[in-house]
Length: 319
Ligand SMILES: [Zn+2]
Image 1: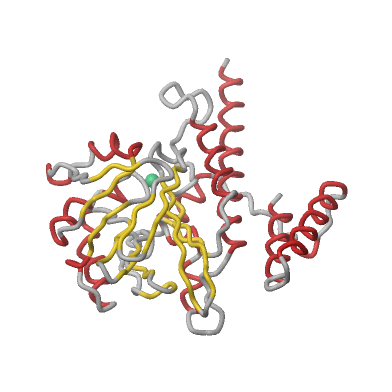
Image 2: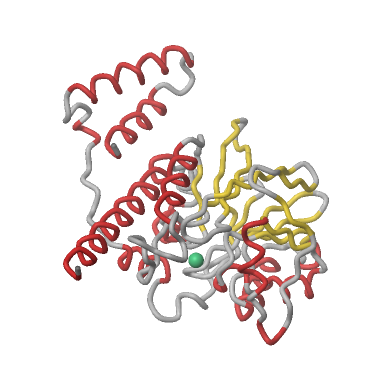
């Protein structure tokens, strides 16, 4: 499936500028062919490495210290900037009416994010809205402090609220100024972000979509929440979250249905920031990577299914 998508993505690039109808016909032809003969499009085939949830979790968190080490703040494209650490993804989306911060991370990360915002020439106090990927401490624990320092409004997605209520660094209650639902949009200045609920990793896991432009072309950006399975997650027969697998599956389907040019993520390894960063200014914007987007979904789905099977077999053997 990955090879096919990659193949279609390559065709998308080859056909850029040609009529949509021709592209669609070629895609349809290719999909039909691939279904009939496996190995079609072999030129694009690359086996998916066999990574387990533990491997992807380690990849996301990085080595010791990376959670807290500032990554050089930089412009990603248009009005989106990276203000996170080596392994925690935080993004500043600027507008002429103030800015949006996506992910305040741990409370201890907030001073680093503030410094990154300022290094880029923006004022932390100009942040008007704070949103987050999901209700885990490494992504949204800093909301209270970030709000205190900026005066911004914290907007949460309904399914994030129960988890956020437990997030009380230093005893501070988690601030929530507005609650939105799946599919709802938030806007500031001329920027509009769409909230796509992509649960599984958590119930309120939300991927944020927006449109940017560069060189006279529009690009769709998605800040992927996470479709990762943490090492301790129970997928098989989980009494607390009996629908956990179905939630992951619905999120893979939803994300695959989006037309994404630029994948970003709540952990920068989800879009290979360390590899792309040195390529900034070397020609094509390295963050334009539709294939990388599908790769991230595919590699996580494979890991989820491997873990589910392990747990199913273990439960069977224990009987
Ligand atoms: Zn998480």
